[in-house]
Length: 320
Image (cartoon, rainbow, N blue to C red; front, side, top):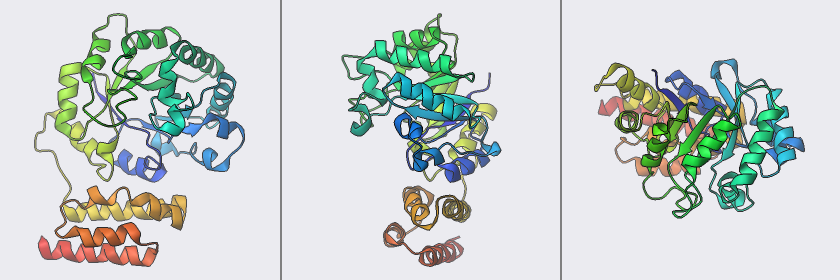
């Protein structure tokens, strides 16, 4: 069976521009940046904008977060009107402003309420509902095996699991052993998507072989590195250990296209800010990149950034 590759929903990273770039490189499933249910029902335009997607991005899910059943259900119905392929509930975000209010991974401290809200959302919409979550709140509270059963029983169609607790944030190593235990559970029949520390195709292959997940979600490993999806597919599906990694010149071309799409989709100011998260990986092999990177990270001028790209292109010609 084919192992599906997901781009993890990441705030201010997995926007439409980056999603489309990743789609070109073979990602199978895309999910929106997470949208606040409270903001959505109050018609906040910035949140509404997160729900927009193109037909090229399908299968596509809209991810919601919140801590109130009524708001989550209403937001899910609003999201459904955008005609995504599924609604994804975020029970995994660890950041304080989300989890500290009982949303995201904060709900892992109140499993009965998590189940109740999820069930109400499942019943509120006609399209599939999926869940993204973590192992638990902390080392002493990791109910993920039982929780996955409960989510399946109330009608959740797919569960994506980040192999860390909320207390770990993004530190330490992701624990895939618990994800593997879920796949070993004979009661579980829904797809399980594994997430955490997948930064190379080899790590994806190891996760598939050792934990038998139905899909692999890649987050930070894809930032400025969208070709990780095509390389991973080559390794998983064709056993091609000599998968293609774009040259520096090819990466520059990808980055330039990503940049122009970001400007078109977000406008000059936010497009420039958004791209700053990607430069380090796009140009990680460029000799003496520090000075150029500082300029890329501080410039607010379209013409200056384009000129910097031109300078990088000239360096590529000289080097290669």
